[in-house]
Image (cartoon, rainbow, N blue to C red; front, side, top):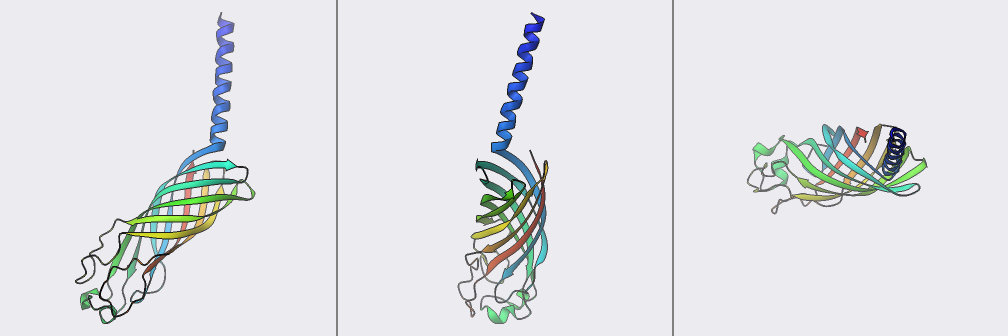
Length: 203
């Protein structure tokens, strides 16, 4: 009886291990974070990327050999600064808005295709990203909300998948105008750009 019980236990453990191995090949979860180099591309804002950070989690689904999809929920934070003549450009702005530092915080959901580049360890990632601004949008002069609440972006980058650790680098460019100024002397669009460098842990 003990031998039978031991044999059943061994077979059960082997079956569970096999299922877990197959599941890990099909579905993988993890957390990631790192640097967020962002800027607001638009008239009246200083040029150049400013350092921030990002933090979040992800899920990978491998659909076929060499191809899968990845969804993430990411909080990202960067800062931007207006120029000396911001109030001359936008009618609703005041002199207090010149050289003003503004925080840009977004909760973003990238939906990415994972394409193996000759090896499952290295992947090309491309896809859309949907973001909601979670920082204060009432930051400039008489404008009730200087920024729109959401944006749509495009993402392209590389993902290096080591046994446990993952390393990522990606470029994100905003597609839509996030400016909410209705009375502007200059009709330049405001679009976000960022470079994300991340390190994470996969489960």
